[in-house]
Image 1 (spheres, rainbow, N blue to C red):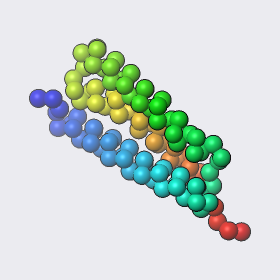
Image 2 (image 1 turned 180 degrees about the horizontal axis):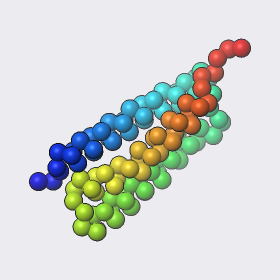
Image 3 (image 1 turned 180 degrees about the vertical axis):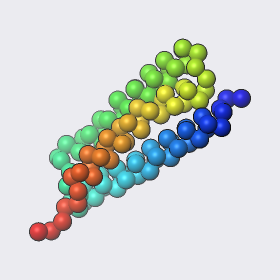
Image 4 (image 1 turned 135 degrees about the horizontal axis):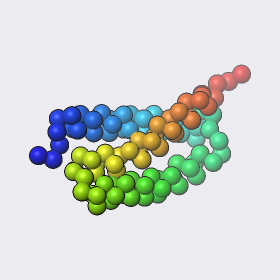
Length: 103
């Protein structure tokens, strides 16, 4: 067996949260490009540049877990954690900036 029920639940919950956060980040960034959300001028660069680092970190963590003999669930979670950390941080940062409301 690759996953225990507990591991499957943890992995699916973490993946689901990451996907929901990513959708909210995408929406706020698109609103920012349209002038409807307060974003910095660097946001369009950031949304491209951060992908390479997230993939690198995810690959490194998964490789470390696999090479240390961890099971499939642990390897998958190790790969997902850096991406989730990034989406959560982006969401928090963009939420704090808020919408660009007319004055």
